[in-house]
Length: 162
Image (tube, rainbow, N blue to C red; front, top):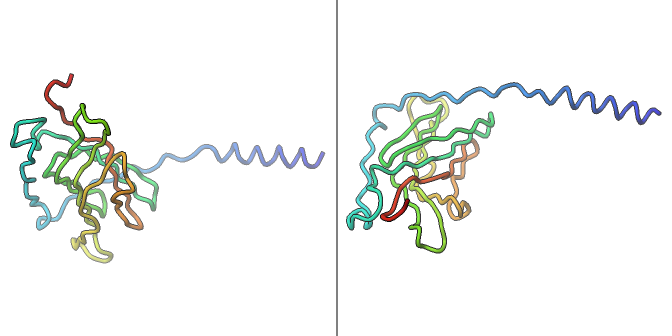
């Protein structure tokens, strides 16, 4: 009988804990002036040949997770754009996906991640610069104790695609 009472009390405590408070929303902040200039990405071979969507018209969806407060957010960027969320700046240099006729499908983006140094106002340090792949995230990983960044999609089209 005691066990049943203890079990019911434990279940009552668990159900009371299930009402999670709403998570705070991420706050976008301004990028310091000295970091606002981002060089446009170089023309790709496909772009020069006129195959697929031009680089400036592609849109990448990048996932950003703050591990301290478990806030995740999607950033939609075009190549050459950057966005600051709190103490991190995410830059997109290029966005690619495999052609529809290729066997192994994947999407990727060349991303740069800068994080504000502790105790500084606008001193950012580059923590990652390289290609990230949606279907092979272990090939290249953003190794940072607070932030996680990954590719979710690269919106572009190829000729003949519907």
